[in-house]
Structure formats: C-alpha cells, structure tokens
Image (cartoon, rainbow, N blue to C red; front, top):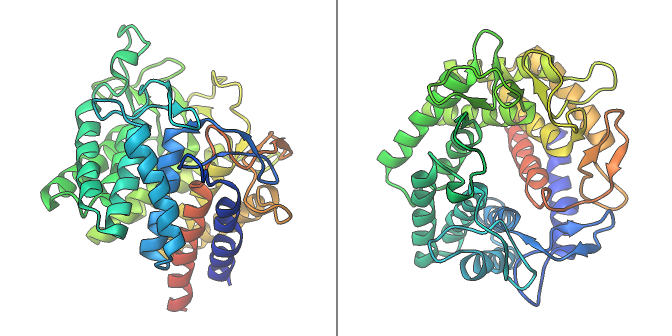
Length: 385
C-alpha cells in the first residue's frame, strides 16, 4: 500500500535521520551539512534551512503526534531564528556561523518566508503568543518587501526590471500556513492575488508552461531570465493550487492545475535517461544554467506530491501513469536504504553527483514534507476504494 510506504519512510527513516545527526545541542538550531552517512562536514547555518526544519518538527507535532521531543527540536530552531538570525529591522540573514554570528546579509526573502512558516506552526504547537506575533510581523515585512525583495542588495541596475514567480508561488502556500495568525480577509485576498499571478500571469496558457520571470506588466521578456522554465517550481506551485482549490471547492482550478502538471512533465521529462530536467528554455535554446540537465531530489518529490493530489481528486489514468513513472525513477535513484534519507543531486544519467544528505540548499524539508503529503493523499485514495 502506498500510504504505508510513505508513512514508514517518514517516521522510521527520514525523521530519525535528522534527529540523530542534525541537532546542535551546544548552540541551538541545526546542522544541515551532512554527508551520506550523516556526519557533519560544515557547521555554518543557512537561515532558510533553519526555518524549514523548525517548521517541519512543529508541523509533525501539530499533524502527526504531540511528541515532546519534536516540540523541543522545533523550539531549538525557533529560538535560534528569534535570537541569532534577525537584524535590527526584523530581516533574516542568509547565513550565520554555528554560534549565530551573521555571515551573509539579509538579501534573500526566502529566509524570511521560512522563518514566518516556522513561527506560525510553532505558535500553534506551543501556544506561544510572542512567537505568534513574530509570525504575523514577519509576514507583513515580507509583503512590504515583495516589490523589491532584495532591497539594497539587488545587484541588477534596473535597466531590465523583471518580476519573479517565486514570490507569488511561495505566498500561496505561506498564507495557508499562517491562517491562524491572520484575519480571514488577509488570507483570502492573498489567495486571490496568488491564484491570479500563478494561473493568469506566469502560466503561459498557449503552452501550459510556467515562466520564472516576466516583465513587470506581465509580458514575455526574450532573455535568458525571461525564457527560463524551472519544472520543479511550476509543478510545486500546482499542488499549492490544488490545496487552495480543495479548500474553495473549485473543481475547475483542480483540473487546470492537473493539466499544467502533465504539460510540464511532457516537456521536461528526459526521454533518454529518465527523470526531470532541472532547467529549460521555453524556446528550446540552451539555458544559462550549466546544471540544467541534472536530476534533483526536490523536483521529483514535489512532482510525486502534485501527482498524488491530482490523482486523489481526479482519478485520471494519465495522472496515475505519470505517478508510477516518476515514483519508480525517484525511489530507485534518490532513496538511500543503507544510510537513510535521500540523496539530492544526480547527473543526467542518474548517477550520484554529490553524495550529501544535506548542505547549503538541501535540509530537512522537501523529503519529509513530500512523505507526509503523499502518505495523506494515498490514505484518502485507499479509503475511497
């Protein structure tokens, strides 16, 4: 049974791996740079990954079981974020030393987004009013910065202003995470804006593909950045849309999002070696990213979530066929039954490129979140049967 596979993997493999290897018991927060066996190979702390892991353990406490140890692990990350990761204006650094001395300035709004998510879930788990207020404050700080996320750290000259897909995509998920700290008007208006941006602006309806960057007026920009497709991003955004559609009982949006997932897969699947390409150019030109043809863990996991949810609500055979294809590739190439957790980076042929379990970009987030989401989708599918 698929639900059992994902549940067991989450609770007996993935989470125990992070519990065993990632906790910094001396300075709080988490080590994310873990080798194949789980040994720490670098102690710097990347703030968006601190937020993601604090969110994950709070989420497990809220959704799976109220285990005191999970709440304590979450608190360790939340305390580190609150006490060491913020500048005096409430912006979050990109990285710090192990002890929490700032290394890289707050140029990246994603640190703020995942801190807000962590605060929201932890406030719900702990009932901590101060953290609840911090979640709310951080959310409004993100909205304030949304037109110029990097602020004074923006390196472009402004000659070619582009708006990025990342923010509307992440807000469509973040706002549901913070539902309990925001008013219903705030939640609904952000959802409306997110649906509009994702489905009517960044989604190119003629091709059913999602662009990463557009001109400020929403028109196409014929440059490397303007032609860029990130298949994993587009697919992840579609399962956020399915969650919103379910909440609003909007069958049309579920069907549209499902169609986009399948279109992205048709265009980004490597028909020679299997797996999903990391980056593509919408016109078929060479992308500027040299790693464009690598196969990454998170892209395949987000796709499994999207397909499981799409199948749960549509029951379509073509969705199931794709699910099986992606499932077979992902479990065969990324899962590491010997050492636990999943590998992250493969070359085009599916061979291990970096044998790490965590680093600057991979932490305790995509794997456990996907295991949880797939477990719950398959539980619902099996219950229907």
